[in-house]
Every structure is written in structure tokens, then in C-alpha cells.
Image 1: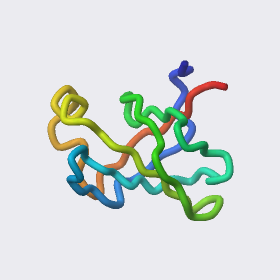
Image 2: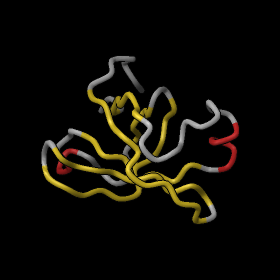
Image 3: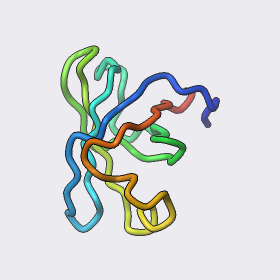
Image 4: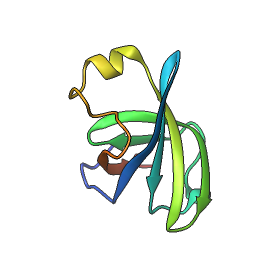
Length: 91
């Protein structure tokens, strides 16, 4: 469940096709607070964390966006350099 309150901004650092589209998103969060399998809304689209790293204030997380997700969202949204509103799910 999400509150609708954006808690940070991220930037797509890497986008590569690996079957699904793997996105690595730079973010200001503390990576110790990001769980693998957690949901993070990225500009309104709920995505699942599959990897993470970095340090607090300079972290990143990775998600895999399916072809259906890419097709049903704004064209061009999932390209390197795109800024995203980030909202972690509630516990």
C-alpha cells in the first residue's frame, strides 16, 4: 500500500534489456532500509526491488520492468537520465 506521498527523487542510471528491462535507479535512500522484494512506486508505477547498493544519500536499487509495464506507462519514461518520483510502500 502507498500513501501517495513522494519521499525522494531518483534518476535512471542504467537501462538494459535482459528479457525484462533492468533499470538501476540512483536514489537518496539508505540502502539498509531497502529490502529485496520491496515495492517502490516510481513515478506512480509499483515496481519490485531485485538488487540494491551504495551508501546512505548515494544509493541505488534495481528493478525489472516487464514488457507489459513498459507498454502501459508513459512512452520514453524508462530511459537513462529520466528523473522519477519515488515512494516506498508502507510496512
